[in-house]
Length: 372
Image (cartoon, rainbow, N blue to C red; front, side, top):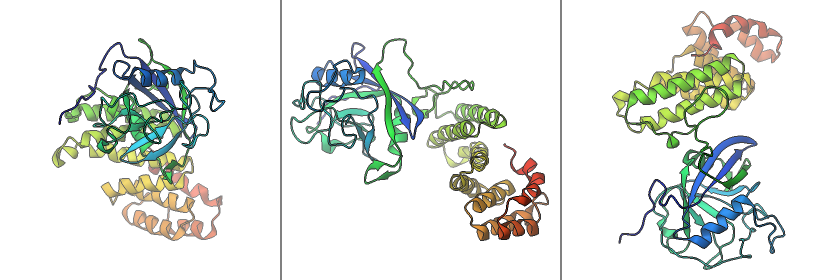
């Protein structure tokens, strides 16, 4: 049976828009902009809008400000949804509506038939408060049980990033917080493009980009542009910002790759390889050994004989105090390139575990730690 489905664009230009500015692990992640279906679910939409602005003061039930600002996403289930809105207890047991502790189910006009829908969490019929969820896949089993009252207009990439956060019993292991929120007016930032002074004009997430992802040259052009911005940041020794740009370039390549056959994919591989290798260099500079190791592994999956990747992985192993594994990589590296430090020197370093021989790396750093 057919049923109403919201458009990918605003269903009604008169409907209100609201935004969340999201922080993850204390760092800015980006902005999500929603359309609220005030034309179909006016009471539910108004509840959410007012909780975004904080204009209703203090709740009678919780004694807390009726405001999403500072509220976490407390529950994340991959291939299902992300949930938030408990501004009082921050764990799914609290919150309240602007109308009192609970209010009734308004209607079930829209179904949970696509990603990015905004729907009310509840504890059964007519128990709506302030908690909500955003779908990351169609969830038809929730139809006629939860009220769909809005949709994501921009920032689905942020939603997907939140969905991918590691969890412990469905709770994210790092804080995922609504750092700011409010009503989104005409002329306000949609938050999709970077605003970090780097010259990057591309949306942070490909889901918010208007480029044709079936055009390999356009995808490659964006990825190369972002990678080069990362290289400039690396030269300025802004390792974290550079790593973020390389990750962004890889996101575009990944989405673009979904559209291409194996032959066309080969055109993207050199840029992807450079991004993994450069990310590893950044992580080593920040002494994030495990993350450096993972980036090296990604690069080596693409080119098992690359000496830069082998040497950087040996450094990551040493940072993790896995000296025997470092020896394996540096042995392979030495057999392939005369520019690797001598095996005896590295062996000495691994055995003695001291920083004094750092100077022996200087000759290699000029080659191995340069970016591509």
